[in-house]
Amino acid sequence: MEIIPAVDIKGGKCVRLYQGDYNRETVFDEYPVTAALTWYSQGARWLHIVDLDGAVAGEPKNMAVVEEIIKETGLLIELGGGIRQEDAAEKLLRQGVGRIVLGTAAVENRALVEKLCRQFGDAIAVSLDARDGTIAIRGWQKNTPVEILQLSREMVDTGVSRLIYTDIKRDGTLTEPNFDMIKRLIAATNVPVIVAGGISRLEHLQRLRELGVEGAIIGKALYTGDINLGEAIINFGT
Image (cartoon, rainbow, N blue to C red):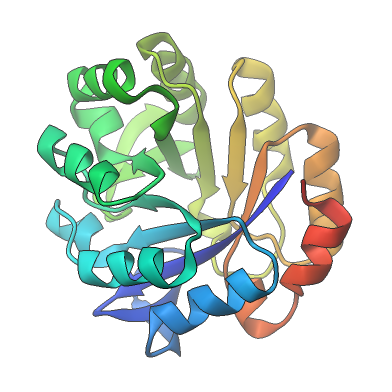
């Protein structure tokens, strides 16, 4: 299982939100590159970056920071937040992003998702960001009636080869992942699933590995010290 640290960028800083609430922000590092270098030094291979400003604006807003992280760390980067145009996706991949994460586009522009999957294959993932079982889009600020399992099946049919599931109500809470939904999601699809939201103890990683997830994204628990990244990678990483 891939252990993936998260770096959320807002206003050029490394922050964590509570349940996706932009008004409940904690700044953990003024310089996201410093955080990325910390996770690199502890053995990370992939880094999950969310451009929070981009998610709201509908276009990437913190690319200078992302480019610096790529240059300074050499980490494999999966990036989400405001990627809703074909040219933006192509540019990001050219700039060294290893995996593009589409969220809003999966609901609002299925044709774009299908086209990008044909062009870039495994470099495209879709993020299933759910609140009470239904998908939220536009930086988690807009709820939709689309059910998570419905969207997951539709995305696989569209050609998506990887899904990233986040339970918004558990994100940043240091509680526990939504194991029931994760189990149902894996059973409903035949593609790799990466999960996020609520992972706060090594026991959670053990259970996620038993469920068969491909990767676990850890955010707040790394910054608070509830989980040591090096220990997590040694015990549960690939």
